[in-house]
Image (cartoon, rainbow, N blue to C red; front, side):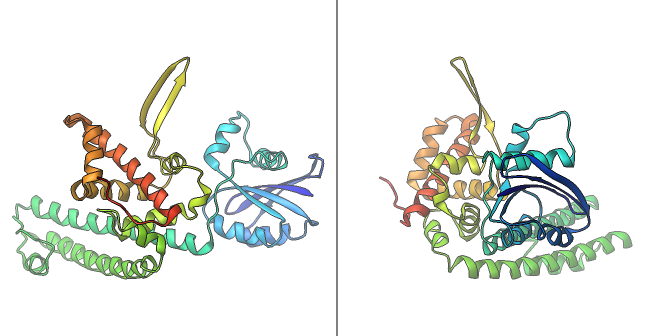
Length: 335
């Protein structure tokens, strides 16, 4: 079986082919978009296996290649850099390295979720960006008011507060124009957030994993759906520490000669999931005696340790989520 390594870009792609004995057969660079690349790959004599590096649009590449190749492996780009840290780097060299790794069966593979889960993740990320845009509009309005010395009432974002803001007297035409445009932008973004939220609620309320995770005190639909979407299949993780490493909530480690140094968390993996997880953990500390007891045990009553305790408690909550997804059991408050 032939082995193919792909170094894929938007406008050019490089293909390297090895024979069944791992010897180099051919390397070429193709100018053009991905449909042209797929048409060229379809002419390779079957059977063959292919490896490409994870990139934007990996879902399309994986689906198209799966229709032609016997085996498709998507390489993890972060781990590839650790394996091939070379002074000489080009598209042809990278394609040959990918092909060689696949032939040796040493590719650090990345998980490729089903198409519907990819769409779910993209919708979750799109809602987060819309919420960030909405927050930016609100901050810009408050900044505008402070710049001109206008004191805003309480509950500025209520219907009454927005009506006051639309009629507020500002000293210049430029300031009034900025205010009107920011209000229009805020209203449009709020409407978009509501539309996306309705779709996500409909998906989450039908998913058993999301419903199980919402039984944890402080965990709402947004946190539960994000964790479930990124975990995808809980059985692909062997233990809870692997899930924590995937979400980047474990400390960096430098251990050698009997010395073990732990630093900040790695922050690898999806940042949206970490953000929601930490927010849910704060709510869990307030609402659950078990989560609060874990937080206080790590914090030791010392204010400088509150952030350390929060991250450690988020790690604990995430491992609980992983166990619940594997077993399907709801949250049980420990004594």
